[in-house]
Length: 194
Image (cartoon, rainbow, N blue to C red; front, top):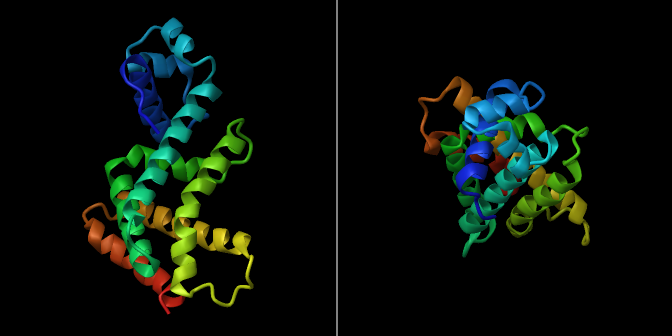
């Protein structure tokens, strides 16, 4: 997903920083305009509402995650692909701590106007895990044609990685990406790497 530049980028960056600190509900359009250094008119010219602003921000974030996973999986299969994607996702989140906080806060919300769009994009991100999970044989007890179960397993892998990243970034930021990746992969390896 292409990143915006100029005024839109400044607005999105300000909104991300504020929402990571205060939550979306605790962030006003006035706050965003002030943080971005733009007039309210410019803010509303670029984003007609707070919902549109945060929808764009979250969709851009999930699109970045999806691209990160796709790149990390390229040319790899099975457990090697899962390891690569977990490491890449942790690195991305460590470089984008505000995005990690916002994703964790919003991923389970169901009352937002952008929920349907976010769900569709999340499905694309999870799809990157589905084939490698199938290749590990970890889902070999599943009947053929169980895409929902594979997607649930993919969501569990993604969720474990996201929660591992948040625990790390909040409580143990001195640990290395490799150490955290090793811990997350150890937790996942029992069934998927059998």
